[in-house]
Every structure is written in structure tokens, then in C-alpha cells.
Image (cartoon, rainbow, N blue to C red):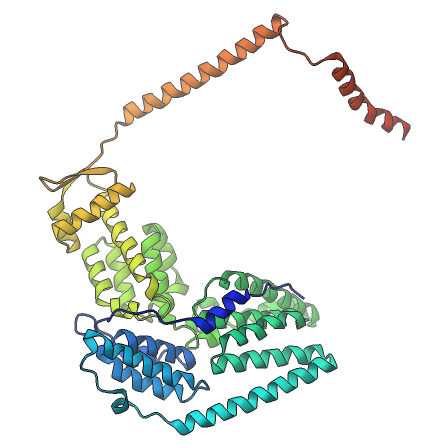
Length: 464
């Protein structure tokens, strides 16, 4: 059994105490298009409801439509608390200045109180049944049955919205895992839960442990399979889509946690903000696996092409046009501002690299900004050390600092020569001190003691 560290109870408590942050209203219009039906069709279950609740609170223009879709999805779940969460999100949207004209929630949807009562009773009955089963298995000391009981309780609490209890039972599974497959299932359950709740602290740890469990499970399967030498080629023939990098490689996580288009958006924005152009070309454009995800969001390929061709004005226009799509994403929204700012700064640095002198009005034309905005960006980059230059504010000119490579070479040579001269002087001084017998020696008693310590192992070696 593999050791898997449980998530701290303090972090588990965050699930029951998370409060929605106040969001700014995001526009949905011709300049910021967003197809709600096509977007939400990529998700299922609780993820679809969570994303719809975010859209209700963030986009008053489509809040009524999102509220209807949210109710149509949540009636297929087992968490009655989502009804109140949806109504609260709609009330928050109506309280925004952009949502003053929204119709009352009662005119948009009808709350099915009978469904709420029925689901609540069914949940209570199932919880009682599962708890009795766990207690019985614990008393009988049936290890495998105890593991399955904790798993079932974890799935139950996750479905009913009690995420702290779900996390408690999922992490409890580690005590009763007897195979690598059991550990893998436990790690995947925890990963699904923390991704669903946007708690990313322990994701890398459980991914590492899931990889280890997967290797051990595969090794055990190969050892127990007769003719194990032919198992690997057979598995390769059975999964050509996996080798081709199809989005179906995500398995049942597609729609349940994330959509293939989300992978394209996350990867592309992070790559443009942090990677070099050669890395973007090799890891995005020439990557067959990632290209399959890019096809899910056509504007992403246009964004990459504009950036690679140094058409930064088009790049920023695409980012602005689809900003609503980015801001309503439950995982990306908190990072959009930082990623966009890094991309803007990187674009300015790349644009200025070939020049020694350039007018700010030319840069403003290339980026679609005002001269004042360009000057602020350039000054910020100079202060952070990303651009080596200075701004002539009177003439609105950016000048690169000229580096005299010849003088720099001579300076390095003189420094190296000075270091060598100093080292040689110290060596000559030591040699002259030795010749004049001016070396400070240790006392005779200490020399004898050191000599005895050196000779004692030799004596012991002779005796042996």
C-alpha cells in the first residue's frame, strides 16, 4: 500500500466556508460575443451548474437565460441547496447597476418545492443506509468492504454538496487500500473533488501519487497476465486515439470537470505570456496533441498566429473581444488580469527589440493604444529592467541604451588580469615564507598525537 498524505482539516473546512467573491459585470454584446447555449453544452453535472451560477452573477445581460439553464441542470442533481445559490446569484446580478432592468426571479423560473422535499428525504434515507453499512463493516473488520463504504459515503457527500465530509471519507480510504489500483482510484477521487472546488494546493501531490499508483498497478497487471510480453503491443493497438492525442484522452473528465476548449485556452494564454516564440511554435503549433485541443476554439489559433506574426494590435483585440469568455471561467477568471498584463508587457519588449530608437506614436499605432498609454507601459518596463532604455518625454521617443561592447571586453579583460595578478602575488608570498622557514607549526605534542592517530589504523590492520 502506498502512503498518501491526507489534506489538512483546515483546508477541508474551507469547502464549507467558501464565500463567493463580488464580481464585476461583464458585457455580452457585439464587441464581446458569447454563445451561452454552445458554451454550457460542453459541461455536465455540477460543473455546468457552477459555471452557470458564475455567469448569472457576472453577466446581467444574459442572467435570466442562465438562470433557466441552471434550474434545468440542477433538477437532475441531488443538492437542493443549489436552488437557493442560483436565486442568490440572480439577486446579486439584479443589484448591479447593469442589472437594474432584470425581471424578478419568480417570473423567470418556478421553484419546485416538491422536488426539494423529495430529494432531501431520499438523501437522508441513503445517508442513514450508508452509515449503517460502514458501521457494520467496521465491526466485522472487513477491510475491502470498509474501503468501499468510505468510497460510497464520499461520493454521496460530494453529490449532496457536503464537500468537507466527502474529503474526509476520500482521504480515509488510504488506510484500507491494498492494491495500486485502490490508491489510484482514491487519488483520482480527491483530484476530482479539489478541482471541482478550485482548491489547487494539493493537486500536484496527488498527481504524483496517482502516477506512482498507476505504474504499480500496471506492473502488477503485467506480472499476473499470462504472456505478459505481448500485453504492451496489444495495448498500443487498442488505443490509437491516445497516441494521436485526441481530447477523448481526458476520459470521463470531459464535461464533468473541464472541456477540451478550456485546455486550449489555459495552455495558450499561459504560453503566450511566458514562453519564447520558438517554444510556442514547437509546443503549441507543431504539437499534434495540443493542436487537437486548439481545434475546439477557433479563435485561439487566430490569437497564436497574430502573436507569432508580431501583429500585436490584432492579438490584443482578440483578447479584448473574448475577454468575457475568459472572465466567466471558474478556473481562469482570477488570473486573467495578470496573464493579460504579462502578455502586453512581453509584446512591447518583443516589438522594441530590433530598434535603437523609435517614436512612441509609431508604437501606439502598432498596439492600438494612445501615446500616453504606451509611455506608461514603457516606463514600467524600464523600471522593472525588462527594457534597457530611456524615454524622451518631450519628443516622445524611446531610445535604447547603447552598449560599447569593445569597452566592455577590455573591462572584463582588465578585471581578469587583476584577479590573476593578485592570485600569483599570494602564491609567491607563500613560497618565500616557506623558503625562509617562517611557517607557523603546531606544537610538538599535537604533532605526535596526530601522528598516532594516523598510525593507529595501520597497526589495527596488521593485528587483524
